[in-house]
Image 1 (cartoon, rainbow, N blue to C red):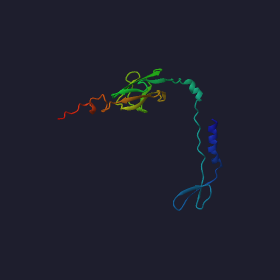
Image 2: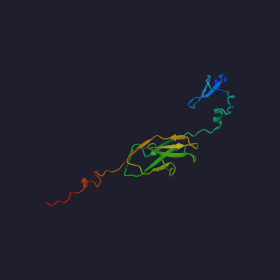
Image 3: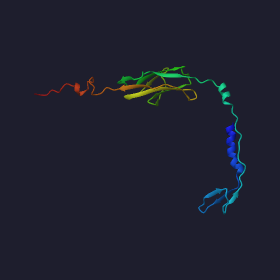
Image 4: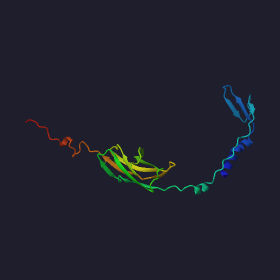
Length: 185
């Protein structure tokens, strides 16, 4: 409350000490204002400053006592496990857990490589990440409360998607695994 009064006093002080204001237009048509007289200037009378009465709000402590305490979530990705490798997959199943379980008004998101993945959990906290490219990825979950505030964000879990190479020894399409062509002697 003191800082509001101090701010208002600082804003009102120059108006209380203000002298006359002069207005004139120069040869280029530019309007000027000054507290110093100028030839061809007209004196302007300023009206009383506009003021308002601040709205009274309840003290934060009183509001905190009446509000319901926010839920404190603990959440984690339990599948895939950290450093897990998937071979020849196009989608990856993600399972998460949250304590307490999120209510119906909570929003649950999966983050893949720092970006939100569209879609909602299929059952409980089970998700399917479609079209996962090969390479290293990080997955986490975010739970937002009914007001949209982040209630919990899990740590990231790193997993890998590998695709077999055409040149791999186990690939029957590898040219090295093909029998030599029949050549006449």
